[in-house]
Length: 72
Ligand code: SF4
Image (cartoon, rainbow, N blue to C red; front, side, top):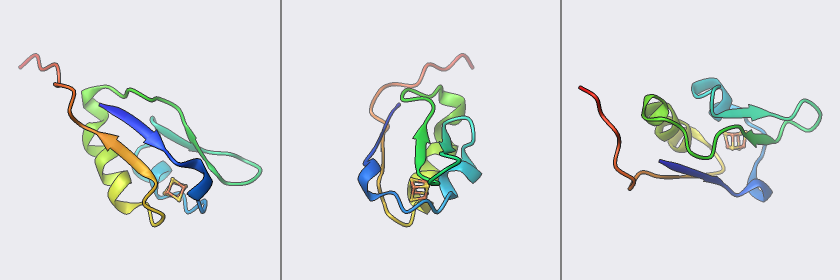
């Protein structure tokens, strides 16, 4: 999975940070999103997709085309 963000559209709502704190953070000064991990592991997939859906500005692009490495 690869995550991209259009930072210019961020309104600092913080939904992404709430659902996927290992992938997203917020700048302490202006509240804008900070992408912590551009290629999060499969364990973060559901949280990242949820964050993309919840983002009111719709600026989180979660490309899910890369195969997940499963060990089960
Ligand atoms: S949910 Fe969207 S608008 Fe809000 S901080 Fe995250 S990326 Fe920015």
